Image 1 (cartoon, rainbow, N blue to C red):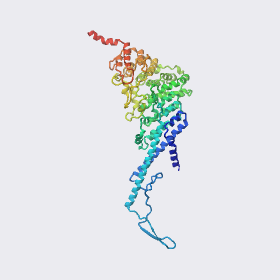
Image 2 (cartoon, one colour):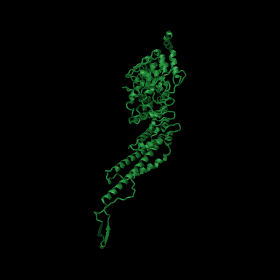
Image 3 (cartoon, rainbow, N blue to C red):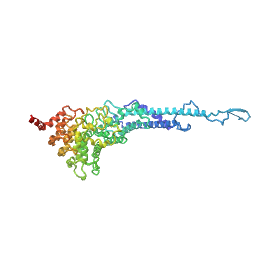
Length: 588
């Protein structure tokens, strides 16, 4: 009776919002936190029950279809409907066709007949019919269970992946209004349930579910990887609107869960921490902009570094450290919270790390061995900017190595796991972004950032992608302010910083505007002008020649940008052209 009541209750409550895909979206948009959490939990429970029923019926059908199973074996037919078209043969004598006897006290003799015992071939036929009837019953029940599960999946998918006119999902809508942690975790649980039961817990649902539309592009991508109309992920929205640090940590925990389960690509999934929208606003930029006033007014060390004396800034510090480490898994130090390590992390994601975050980290952190009572405001960034890693790279070198390989327009496809290239991608792809001198000068045929990409996604449009050069230029400017000599320090593998900046698409002015803002090439030339007259040891080309070989078709950059780079580099050193023409004039 309990099972029947539960089934009836489930059947009665599900159709209430079956045709209202906006129900969950309205709940999270109107601060219906408790109702939204309860609704998500109900969807998850019903998915679990439907999936369990589907697996149970599959096991029963397999048991009945086994030819070695005896017909009288009980396979729990309590919930199966009997067709009633045939009756089991029960009770027969030892072969007597008729039996006479006196059953009354008055001596009246009556004749009582019994059913004749069937022959062996008749018994086999009866057993065969019973077996076929049971198989039909199993197939019908299994088909009904599958249809019920598919219907649950369809409804849950419609609720979780509903999009409004701005293509915001319920997760986006909740992130806009500083939600409590239980709402976000409830949406994440629903996403996990869709992934678990949509893939077919018994191995029989996946193909049919995808044929019914369960494998659409929007639903293959995790809910945290979906982007809105302006390219914003829900994590970016949460960071930019002041969501609590517990909510932000929940996002990162969910991504780690998908990576551990091999549900998403390990490298591209971690890019959620720095993935910008179409306006080139990254999660770190949005988070720092929202909390900058609060962080600048309360300068205290985190509790882990100040004996528990830190304020809420300690939570901000922990999130900033984790977000940077999340986006830079290739940096694996022994002490992840040391200031030089954090500076290297910021430089590694210079395109999407705001310069004020780099300055705040240096101002609110301390190096190894510092006393907790010291004045962190006096900590100088020169030591951090001059600290090299084990390969001899300075933070400036890391900032010039940056080569993005994903955009908000391809993020949903990038995070989907590719089993062919997922192995060891964390330790190989990011380190490969540092070009060798030969790679830096082969950009005429293949841009460095494009050769780094481990896989190409068919149909991806890359022409509209512009890297936020201005943000990276600010990071480089800050590092050069702390350590000007870095501009003249060559890379460990060879090549000057100017050569590497040219090979990675650096510009004389910032690429996002043409109003005279200094770009990477101008900053490096100001601190080390002699680098512009030194030929590249690998190709023998001068920097202005190398700038002329950079391809302009890979991204939608100003077609005059390359000309401007060549002109300014040559304008600073016109003797390079004169020296090249002088021998020819003498010969004439």
